[in-house]
Every structure is written in C-alpha cells, then in structure tokens.
Length: 138
Image (cartoon, rainbow, N blue to C red; front, side, top):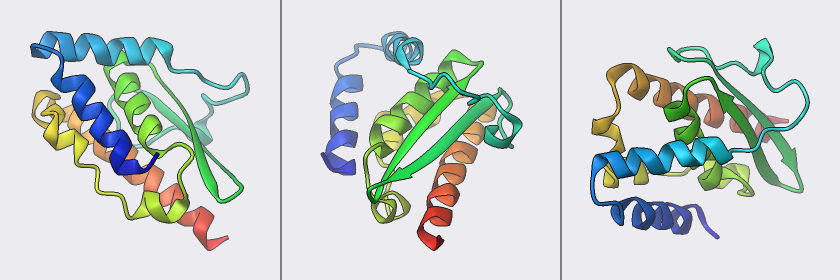
C-alpha cells in the first residue's frame, strides 16, 4: 500500500469513531498493541529529543525499504507513534521524505493534542525524516 492509501485508511478508522473519547481509546489501543523488538530499543541513541515524554525510535533499512520500531512511556504518544509506523513501515526512503502527512490534520489529531504532545509529534516526524535522509546519503 502507498503512504496515502494507509493515511486514508487511518482517516476512515478515526472518522468512524463518534467522539474524541472514542478516537483516543482507539489510539491507546494501538499503543498497547505496538510491538517492539527485544533488543535495546530504549537506548539513549534511539531516544527522541524534544519530546516531553520519553520516545524511542529505531530505523532499519533493508531492500530499499524502511522499517521503524518505536516505544514511549506515554500511551498517547505511543499510539501516535504506532500510527506513524503504520504509515511509514515498508516504504521507500524517498517516499517517506516526500510524504505529506495529511491524516494528522484530516482527523483533527493536530488540534486535540496538548501543545507539548503536538510539539513531541513534530519532533518524532522530524527525527524519522532525518533518519531516513541519512539512510539515503549512505
């Protein structure tokens, strides 16, 4: 699936929830189901700077595809991370760098996050894109 097809699925998933509480319940459920590798994901090297909560991301590159692993000590941020991983996993580096993440705005998630969480989400997206740009340079 393309990045936009996945985003459209997320928009449909979230728009089927009647209210904000249901949307956040869905995001928390995603957080609880986010799989992390058994190795040292929660290392200082993988920790994202600029997030109020602790967030860790590892970027793997194989066969011209990006694979992300993530974790957070905040369920909301971990759920948002799960959405981003869903969008970016198994995509080419070029597609990730050029992606327009419109699902965040079309679902209203951008206005329903606290300012600190919104800043954290931007830091996560920037980190992912910078990591992918590094892969492209190598």
